[in-house]
Length: 384
Ligand SMILES: [Zn+2]
Ligand SMILES: [Zn+2]
Image 1 (cartoon, rainbow, N blue to C red):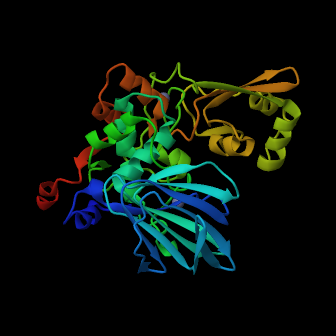
Image 2 (cartoon, rainbow, N blue to C red; image 1 turned 30 degrees about the vertical axis):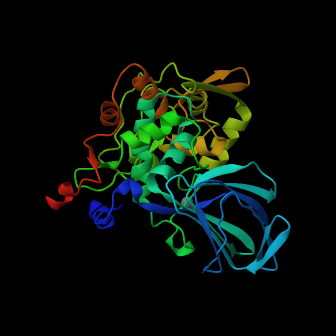
Image 3 (cartoon, rainbow, N blue to C red; image 1 turned 60 degrees about the vertical axis):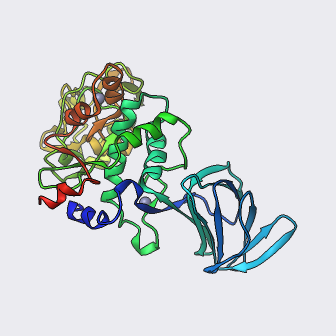
């Protein structure tokens, strides 16, 4: 976990929102060729670290991997083969587009700068971007879009906190964050203008615990009525990730789910994976009729304890908060919520924002004993 002192050193000369981060983009694809075009703003081009003289405004490029080098093509010409291609945005409104063509995929739009190198015989693309532009892209990807500005503010503070706490994740690979769920999903500029406004209005805000550590800003889709303690899911007990009751999400999309499984498959699973005594008639009955009123941690009987999270993972269930009832030769699993259940329940927070709760109130509701601090206010740190 990052101590906030770390952020202090970043802040000595500029505000946190303008801090630049290196994010590997399109990281889930094995890229061999891409098209790139400048959408707005002035750019300069570097090839193998050498500044090229041409102005780049409105230029388009095609980059093709050939024998461990990047062949850089422009309409009607080829600039040569290089190890490193970089377009550097010179202005605030510098925006470029990138479209994978081998394999083919949709066009994406990003702010600021782009570096492409060859790593493990594939093109690796890294977006050098202001933290808050990155946060805005993450907010839209992680919240699914189409919600209120107040909820976007909640999500912006969470995504900023998470990003700052994980900047060293990929340091050995030459960038700071990736654009997959391993870090946070990031697909470039947001399309909803409310997202950018929410990021701006929460400029520099992040969550810390009593010890001034950036918190593990965990969130998930829907808790089904009760969130989980962190140690019940991840083994580590964090004082701010406590189970809370939540009625705000109970009528949302992911509040309930149902799954039918053959009784025989279920009992075989318990018998062979967990050595559960299915031949004992009472044990068998109990295993076919399980009730979680409050969120539980284990299904236990006769000294055997099976974590609900293990059952969730083995059967790929939407949550570990479920009950089971017998139905002829099947069981019906009736589940509540969607996701790991630790931290902030997004659908609950969306509802709270919609009925008028502020982002501060919402964050205080789902995280215990935390502070929202402004990382751009140096006076805060100077007092420490
Ligand atoms: Zn990552
Ligand atoms: Zn909830």
